[in-house]
Length: 422
Image (cartoon, rainbow, N blue to C red; front, side):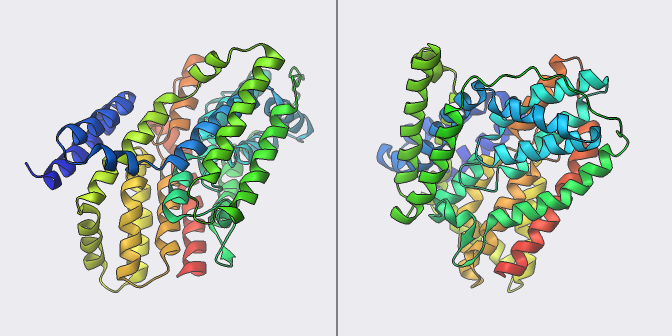
């Protein structure tokens, strides 16, 4: 069997298994990568070079910082203050969602949900209300804002690595408002959706403060990391190595500080990281890299370009909303990794600004996961926490919030990107 056929077969089988066996996605990704090498569809060298090590460094480094930041209890402490200042439960919930979004712009989505969830659950118990809708709102808010910055979530890191975008270019790219502002406009519109959903909770919020800040050092480290990433944008303009190195250095500093300040073993700190997602990401790079190396990406781009003809708006709309629908059911990381080169080639064939298709793809892929409880890792974690508390989430319960929230946010971001970049 020729390499081209092997690469496509392994890609299709892997994606089917991602849907059927979501809990085994890392094993599937690594198994598919190993098969590509064993069958010589790709060489060991090509497989190694297919992995974007800069993105991997950013991901692992920010995971460490997020873990230490969460242990410091600063986010939970701030959340308590916000809740106590709110005039009623509606605004308390909305403020928690805003805080979730802010943290998620700089900390991985799952970590963000774990940071904010205890406050939401405590508020629900205090007011004797069902926490289900509140936790769903936290999860979707986290997923939305994770797309706003380079370090917010793996899809953003993938786009940054692929398009050679630095931290600052997520705010302004080639002199124009970038993806950050598209996401924030989507957040503003979806905020009104959440207000409508929770508008019947008008009771005054009273939450007894229980959180005490253990240390402000992790917060200082996180702020320093963000500042250095912004500075590195001007030094490593090709986004080749510096951001990943900075994140890893800060991660090591955080581990050393945690050991000296709290006596926590460095080994246990490393062991507690989300290695499953880390290895999954590496495996996806290789599987998608094999498609690119064997020419399938260009074939798909040719097909889509032929389908939309010269209608740029149709092409852009197709990319965004196909991404939304598919990301509701399949993992957005492998989907985005496969589609980024397709979007770039399509933009070249239709002679349009690449950011139009690339930003539209990120919007559709990142936000589409908010529709269903299985569309994003943060959703799965939130539902797991609710089940543990005795509130199992039904599929249709999630859809009642996920669908209006997603399409409000997507519509706003979709129009913003079109008017700025078309």
